[in-house]
Length: 239
Image 1 (cartoon, one colour):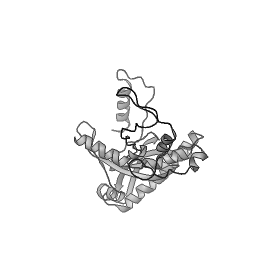
Image 2 (cartoon, rainbow, N blue to C red):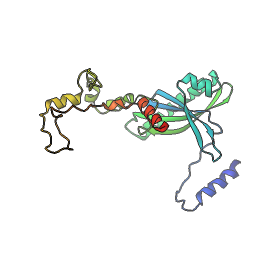
Image 3 (cartoon, rainbow, N blue to C red):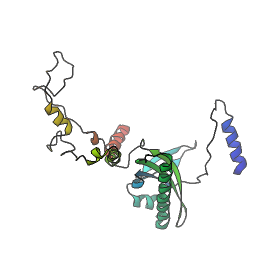
Image 4 (cartoon, rainbow, N blue to C red):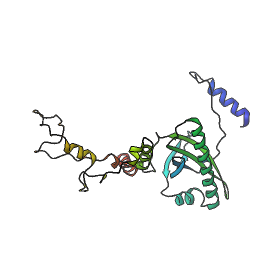
């Protein structure tokens, strides 16, 4: 529609009832998106990428049928016409844009952003050529489907203090019920005196379970990783 069409659209947007914003952001139009690259960036480096797409757009203009590739090669073969040259061009642009975004964030804050997810929209523009567009930049508060959360939070904790960085890991990550040593929580509980159970039912006790009751299994926080979260959500949706 050109400039006149854009002007008409902005006028309709800004003059609609209840509209109170004082500015409108306009970006260059992305004509087609073949897939999306969700890049997980730690300390300025891409450490993992999840490739996704929506298979169709319905009659109302909404994206439908979310899909994700199991590997980079699968994404290239199925969604990028198996064009290795165009894929390499797209990955070079992703790396260059990521460096630019990292440098921009360094200019905005004296403390570097440890963890960022940057979503890029990829299009195979022609044989051997790709166009890449920035879709979203999210600092830390993003969905971690596609990366091990331990990598992210280890990087975050490493920036807190030298003491946290130098602290050795516990003997076992999941000591409860695994026979692989005790967790820090269990060691702390063993050092505390056991309090008597409440006189009436329904209460909770502190210091440890009474001798006549089986201890509850302690599930480590890191047991809820991205793969388990995806499988449980999928099972819930199927039900």
